[in-house]
Amino acid sequence: MHKMSLDKITEFFKTSPKYLYKKGEYIIRAGDQPSGVYFIEEGFVKVSSLTLDGSENVHLILKNSEIFPREMIFDIPPENVSFEAMTAVTLRRKPKESFRELIDSDTDALREAFHLAGAFLEIFTDRIDNLELTYSYPKTIDRLLKLSKRFGKYNGNEVTFEAPITHSVLAASINMSRETVSRELEKLKRKGIITEERHFIVIKDYKKLNEEFENYFVNK
Amino acid sequence: MHKMSLDKITEFFKTSPKYLYKKGEYIIRAGDQPSGVYFIEEGFVKVSSLTLDGSENVHLILKNSEIFPREMIFDIPPENVSFEAMTAVTLRRKPKESFRELIDSDTDALREAFHLAGAFLEIFTDRIDNLELTYSYPKTIDRLLKLSKRFGKYNGNEVTFEAPITHSVLAASINMSRETVSRELEKLKRKGIITEERHFIVIKDYKKLNEEFENYFVNK
DNA sequence: CGCAAATTTGAACATCGTCAACTCTAGTGG
DNA sequence: CCACTAGAGTTGACGATGTTCAAATTTGCG
Image (cartoon, rainbow over all chains, first blue to last red; front, side, top):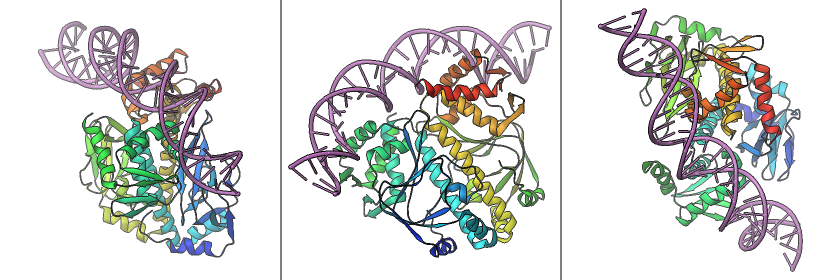
């Protein structure tokens, strides 16, 4: 997300007890009534739903300092999504009412929440841009570039992801089959642009990855 | 959008001069520096971009009481999109600075803007849900259902659209070819669920359209 | 070491996009 | 009021891309 600090919101959650989740555990199951607003102190949370034909659909991966579920923060209808710990996760939780109260009474907190909304809009815009691509190669590349922005640790031209992004999570987030993702990543590996280490994708040459995306459309 | 009133924001724009646009005219061209924040008093505005391979991509259709561009409202990077009048359009315009000033100084206005953000998030969520569908038939139906929500005038089980949605706009908003949209609409027409009158789509049986969507996945 | 999860690979198949030719509709001007 | 034109929609054939299914292989971790 952006540079702006979320001091008031972070502060607000500091006083509540910690909740620990193990990798793979559900925090909220689709359809269940959430017990409040959650603040991620540590770890990664996968937000996903099942499509009508039974396949998984990864909407978003949340990281530390982010809050969920969205319907508790904004005035929007509840979404039918699950929240699952992708790694060991530490959360703080507050009742919905007290969060609403915070942003109703504290203008700074409201301003932070407004800012958060902007950040979400940006994530969604990225996601839409991706879904609009039709070919699997640029689509996969685009995803890697966006994931870098959100989860990448840069080291010169090399980027490592701090979140455990498996092929199948990647596929479910861009509406492609796992097999196709594997095939496209394979192409990138052969070109020496990425490698994979213990199921963690490493971008060896970020600049070249970018070029690879742009060049794709030149010959088309 | 939602039930909440946008009194403060509407009020704010009331004092600025009117701008009139004819059907087909550009309000902001992609890449141009917007001259301020626009408020739609009357008409429909198409927000679109050109994809890298040259095809049009309709992001959103804006209607009266809505404001644009997004980067003037939220702290997000500018988008490379065009704003085009789909019908005759009446706008009001204010400088960016004075809008920022409004939401910085007036908590009610900030609250309205926050609410607006929630509404946009919902629109985007709908759009993502659609883009995630893989088959053209349910995808087309889903689009019609969402368009009803935003532009529909209900009359019992019949819905007419107030915005001029051509096949080609429909196609460009769900990432399908115009031809495929035509074919899918044709199926719906044959089933008596929709009709078309002077290039305006009319949903004859909203309930059945809904069922048609859900049933699609039953046999799959 | 052994199991489960993750990935790879190949082949057959289906869906949708593209192209091209055609039809229909609405709006314009003579 | 008719002819013309541009925009919009229809239809059919074809091919490309990605999904699906299945079987084999690799990796990670207890």
